[in-house]
Length: 486
Image (cartoon, rainbow, N blue to C red; front, side, top):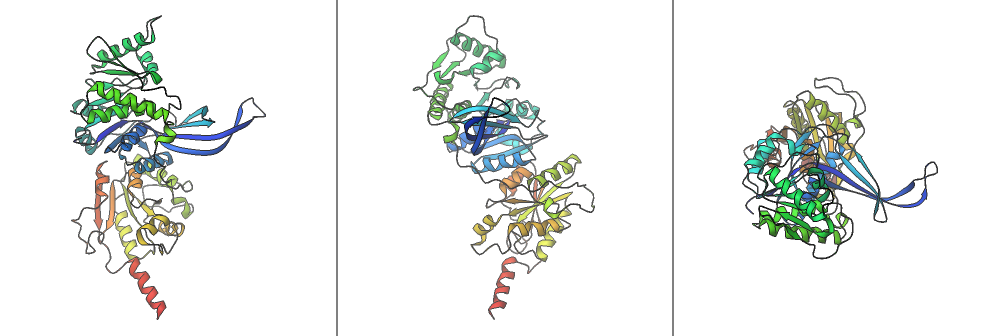
């Protein structure tokens, strides 16, 4: 493959709540589910991207993420799965699908997040990634990303094979896609069936109708446990049966099918070969236990704090407790207010184990570059992995409170990973700041910061600000221990 596989579409936060049912509710004849476990995972385009990444491909996800706790959770899950996220801004809340399950059966699905918000404009970096792709999968869940005009123009212009997984509430496929992959019910909604027609006749008529309407190279209608029906320029469809019978949880099977077909096309397969591979992959996925068995372990949760108090862009006394400026909720509210006013979001990060004058100088200089400053703070576990088992000296709770108490700091976000990439993918700052000693110890700002590539995904910039010489947490600790040993 000459470039990454790009997955483009709407991402949801899926949650499976497992439990047992032993009684009915006393005030209504409905079962009571006693929760025993809950699992979060990316849904929609995010799930398709995770499937592709699990096959060893370099995967880029272009999606819209909200500035809320759900968006932060999705960023962490996707980063843990090895998916590079190039986010678009999303107004409103993260859409969530919650399945309540007992003994492998779904009792109820609870959706929340409200109507879909408008995705923001893609950055130039997003458009370049689409142009350089080895294949593009459009995983449309009807929430607006596939309608974005600039993205549609980029999809029409790319030379990479495009697979379009449609949704009845979504837009028509971009003309010229290599393969569209609707399921039976989607075909019936998009192309009304003739009365009395057989199942295969309905699927074939619908596929040919969509192929002509969308000017697609081919349309593969997935038939659940019976495989798929492929219609191309010829008059006779190709039926691809499943290798064997497979029963189980089919949640995500369509995403697995589309992802497998996209990977095969990226590797040079013919459309008919890609569909055969996709049928085999989707069948094995269902037979192997479905989504519960197919995904990698969940990423750590980015921790939330209490709801923050009101804020303005102009310097003003900050009300509320210091703790109200720590956590996902505080950061999400701050981001919403600053961006609604057209302000510039600045972020910096580090361990800040023993807060000293060098830290304060960097923070004050960073705050002057925009309308708010968010500090991404390494958690205790992250500091220990980076600095050794004797660090940190101060707990993350104390470090975050000290930072939030500074007048130049507007909010603090604690992250568990070794690098702030996941936190940055959610916050999407306009400017990322490091102290001048970061590159070489001598203030050489010509060295590229490791976060620069992440910032480029949404058009952000990385900068270095002057650092006070002779200030170092490690040096402070060494000198303190030396004094004590005398």
